[in-house]
Length: 258
Image 1 (cartoon, rainbow, N blue to C red):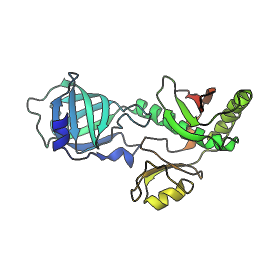
Image 2 (cartoon, rainbow, N blue to C red):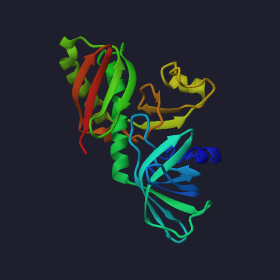
Image 3 (cartoon, rainbow, N blue to C red):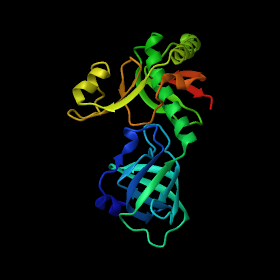
Image 4 (cartoon, rainbow, N blue to C red):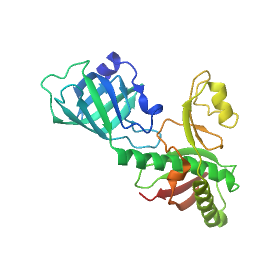
């Protein structure tokens, strides 16, 4: 993989700007066999979201634009040092697969929509934590996979309040969902991004950079590289299934009906 890293340029992330777009054209830069026996494609741009930020990768397929001489089933997508790797298998293999071939990317729509809803719901809980009087809890990592999504916060809640706060969170989340509101995602200059996020950005965001910020309605935003819904109302049927606090951390588990 390292040889390909050295020769490739950073992948343009089209999904950063066009999250509802499920098809796009790109140029093949490299094709090789990975260590696990699967093939990997590197393109100049992609609408496939790679696994990261607690969100699973997109799946789908890639075909040759001009002649459909091959079909590549995308099973997994990963990013390393700015380069996106599309891993999978050839359903139909071209005799000559060379650099510069124009390809068509097609993302699995149902998987993208589910992942986007689960990820956006995690951000909604961040908003609701403040609304129910838990402003002292600092957002940490999130796990937005369908098998058990949760968001984690630094800080604890008294055991005696967990059940009541869980009910308050679910009530507040569904109240905001019923009201709806635009979900916007864009790149901003550092200072403007900080203002949109309540006046400050996390330390891991380099000063002078242009972070990508997601905002739910009129609430403060936060840096995020994932995919999201276009309106809060798309998060209907959200449930807060459990709330735990232990060793200085609080976890809120949630789910959304498919």
